[in-house]
Image 1 (cartoon, rainbow, N blue to C red):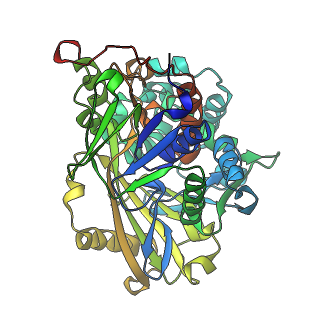
Image 2 (tube, one colour):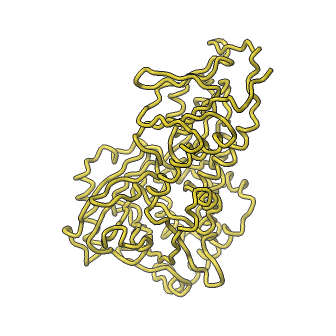
Image 3 (cartoon, rainbow, N blue to C red):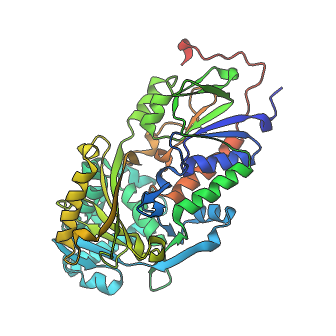
Length: 456
């Protein structure tokens, strides 16, 4: 007879929002869940850190009014009612000049483009926002699709610099589904006929959300294995899945879900078939080197400034203090300066002092009122595997979530096939797959299956 599903023991490897959401839903299904995380705290890319005398998000995050899945999760955590909504402004740094593009009038006045260019750019955005069935876009290169709708001048002046800023030269292999997902999410954040953008945040940032999340997990009996790096995961069929830690200890489960980036998952799971490992290893990633600056005063009143100048050592300016009440930052301004790079970039070898000098020098040129002594605190976060790049025919080449190894499942941000990497899409990925995991039939105790070298 199959064992009672309520007795199943599940391991979730990775304590980001994907892993935490999976752990919560599995526990609510009656399973015994252990959550493994190599760092000493939960949150993953949404974790918080100390910046001078404040605690705030290590990377920049925002809640959109259209983020249904994230808002639903926050409702479960009794936090949705504490979202604070704000209008924000958008800037563009083009040809060493800073421009505002926060409403229709400013768009029409935007000097870098002529009237025809602006009409074609607007048509591109409206066309992307109107597409419901995105699958055909996976067969079209993003540059080809943009040139069809925007024309070569707009592509060269606006789109290509923005694509290179986010994807580097990998934009050449990227499908049009990427730009569709990007535009669709931002367009959904607008409301009423004035098309006003409303962005939101929870008081206290993701540190507060993660604390509330951790409390909910503990209340549902989830066991935490924090600060414990997993070394290898193996299976012997009915005997279960063994999670072995770097310190040599191990524990056996009925199932394990690995939520780490694809290349790391391939290394953790040696019993995968060559085909499965290749599919994981062939997923291309962009990394990020993101500086956080606590300043005496803001750089501008834009929430985000898009940069089209490749000479600038960061690919955007995100002024969190234009969205979040500055009282959370001791009256100062919090600015994120990300640089998206390939996962093996030399940028990961630069010291914090080198990065700081490059950034401060650039800010002095971009913002005349900025001075070096405005910087109260400076920290750098580095992530090698951040953004899976949606290449041509991306979804058709993804590895399956349920692997050939009994009891082993691999689910990570690479499985977001119709959206962009953000917390809302991550939560949606977890919610949809948690329902599928609930339907998995347990191994019968009479099974004599054993995983051997001949059937790996």
